[in-house]
Amino acid sequence: MDGTHNTDDEQATRWNGRAGHAWVDAQAVLDQTLKPYEDLLVDAVAAEPVGRVLDVGCGTGGTTLAVARQLGPASRCVGVDISQPMIDAARARAEREGTPASFIRADAAEHPFEPAAFDAVISRFGVMFFDDAVRAFTNLRRAARDGAGLRFIAWRGPAENPFMTTAERAAAPLLPNLPARRSDGPGQFAFADSERVHRILKESGWGAIDIRPIDVECTLPEKELVGYFTRLGLVGQVLPEADEPTRAQVIETVRAAFEPFVHGTEVRFTGACWLVEARA
Image 1: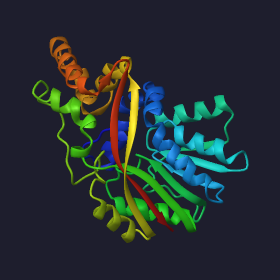
Image 2 (image 1 turned 180 degrees about the horizontal axis):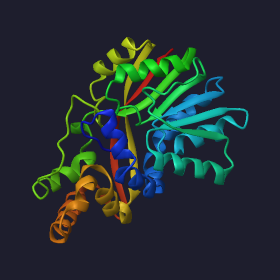
Image 3 (image 1 turned 60 degrees about the horizontal axis):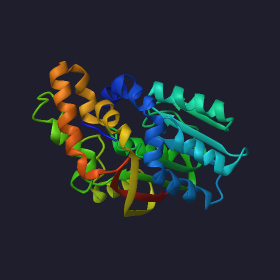
């Protein structure tokens, strides 16, 4: 649930390194926190006569597997992600569950998908990290049959998502090497501007574009909060490089900054997002 400005090569390096392994380790917590968004996508896919679904930026496979369970064994559900650690975790989950889903380790912007192979393309926070979004969505359009639905969820702006920036705002005075966010490149809030999203989809060949704001109540266990902000996000990127006194001070300061979101044993926040739909 984070991101700075990176090229596709930098994204691959990051998500195949520390960041990818951190997301695998946090899989259960993240799946719990983001499940309301997963449910929106599963319900949308289930409402249409589809059997072949592509999940872009699938991570550890939670949404892909949920769709596969919903559609049944006759379906073909494929998850694609640039992170080998996450794809390995997704494949292991599918094998454990016996769920008929498959996973590809690839850059969805350039992977040679079979043309017109999918009835639906979905993503839960997985499409904001492309260096060239038009190129990526053009490639996804080629993979979709005519009339196929595109549905994805992306974050709105940082001002509407204070939970997502709490750690970096609190830690910034203590971590001078903390990466700065940019609004003009790939990252968590790359799709904050709905007009830009509309232009990207139109230029890449999608039609019937509909972009709606949604506000979703999310939770995670309070006992997982320190692990969340020390392993994930911008703070998680640089905290391992800090000395022990700095690390301890950052943890204390950032944990205190999250206090407004803590309610007993639970952390609660509102996720301000776009629900984006289009047709091939």
